[in-house]
Image 1 (cartoon, rainbow, N blue to C red):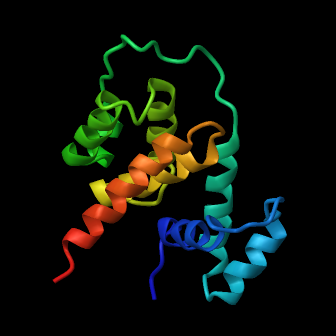
Image 2: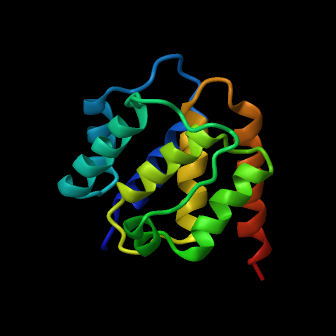
Image 3: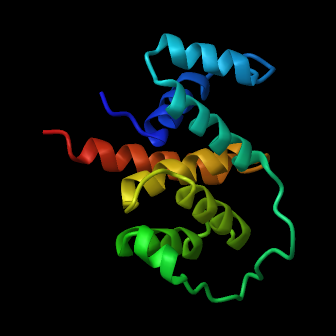
Length: 155
């Protein structure tokens, strides 16, 4: 099985999102859980590094609400047009704030995919919003969008 960093992250997210425990599992506990689930060491290490980047603080000035986002050449190459449009849509309907959009873009580019599609974008948005305090309403909205879209394709 060829799993990606996003596969590992999705497994972690689905395993721990409803966890009622007060404390978050540490890195070694996560690594042990992922090894038991059958993931390879390389993907585990990359996924845990990705999570570290999710919790890293960003330096500099956050983008202003009135700023217009222009995607650079690397972002345009890696993020599909649909994924870029979806991010801007989420910002326009108030699910993402400009600073969150930038964190999502950063985390999307940290994945090991050459081209990132809308489905991958939805999962990363959900993980970013879940990781930030005070974002329960926005998280609930994106969760509804993600799972409503998935169930629409079931025949």
